[in-house]
Image (cartoon, rainbow, N blue to C red; front, side, top):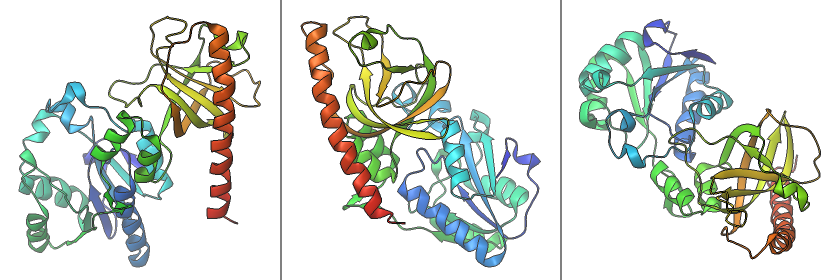
Length: 320
């Protein structure tokens, strides 16, 4: 995948199949667009082109920006575009000046002038341009004017729940990781470098890998204990994660840590990725360290049962 950080650097391609959006989380709705693009590009011998924005427009325009938390960081988003087979990714620096482009100016001066699309594929509720005044009807009219095709992908739903980044954020913030994962189409994950903690877990038989504090605006799921999968250097392990303030040891610092099952490698300063499968309980304060240890023994048993079911389901879904 070719990545462009300035649209002026983009070299036009034959039969460009294009989409535009912020794509926070690249959930099932976004995935339907990307799959459609890749299929059509293959059929006509074209290339796919994704135009996305960084930072998130709401941060620049100060629309609920103090409360805005994103599902995925920029690195993870780029990885997912690559996984879906996108040929070209254009990351437009979103500024207040850029936000003043009208919908017509954006299509004419950016999309048509720089990319020369054969077809533009968008989501069911796509809006664009200054104050998001551009809509599918106007896009269709501009397609006729500038000689490109336009297609809208239908709303995606899971168990009668419409898929949207807003619903996924709400599910994560309430701790409903399981349903967030259904809407995402994959497990919500947090990546970070392993750093030294207070090592209390090691003294009671539950050593944990602590990861760096998350980047600003990255969602942190509600505090609690989770069944997890952990990726380290391309290998995958089961584990039990915790997000919270560790009230029993009263250090008051937000931590993201995971006890990796059947694992004894030295991984300080390495990056790991923690994928959250399900949440088993709230974080709570115990009378003493021994009470905490007994709870962790019980938690670990429950997490192993959850992950055993998870692996069985995966094997049934992917028999080959």
